Length: 55
Ligand SMILES: [Zn+2]
Picture (cartoon, helix red, strand yellow):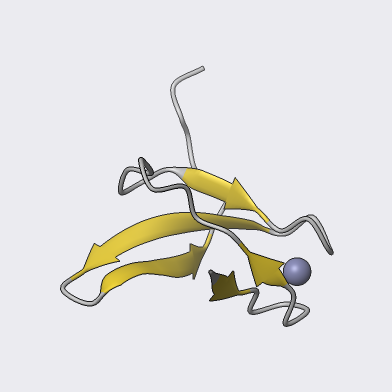
């Protein structure tokens, strides 16, 4: 369980989550990218502006 940087809401990270996966805060709808660290996953604010996902 991690806290949302936007609203302090609780975001649950699945056990089978992968680095680079996008999770969305159920409280405010903010999107975060999972970044793997030695301590576990951290949430990085997903930059959706100006990024090309190749779709
Ligand atoms: Zn939030």
